[in-house]
Image (cartoon, rainbow, N blue to C red; front, top):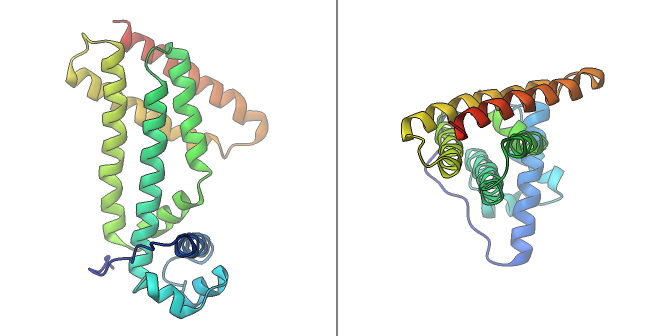
Length: 203
């Protein structure tokens, strides 16, 4: 299945924005609980406390709602990354590592992320659109590394950013570990990143 050509209607009034947010929250919860195929627009409207007509006013189809949910997730992720990059320049490698791991832990708690993962198995375009998001995050990391070390070549920064991004993926898995293992594992990831970032920016 793929996202169709229809587009979500952007609300202009605050009341409409709140209604859209509630509908997307409900869709995210149901996609996680039931999966994309088993979730109906009627169930989404009921979970949000809205009428089906209100849902269709903003989202012509379930596919359009899925697209809007991904767009919200991507926007939130981009804003979180940009905020980190704004605060990161001039920080020590250990501080940068701590900020990056913190970002991953924060993003993991976003329900939209779990919903997007559920959608990836059902909607091909959603899975494809996650690639540009990952690439954008890597570009931001590479730019941060080059700002910390102007002598760093673009290619070395890109390779370092890819490795850092892959290392950060382990944070999501580690966050699921039992409490007695979770903290030491996260601390170890931070130490690994600190050593690697220091090697890159202090070369």
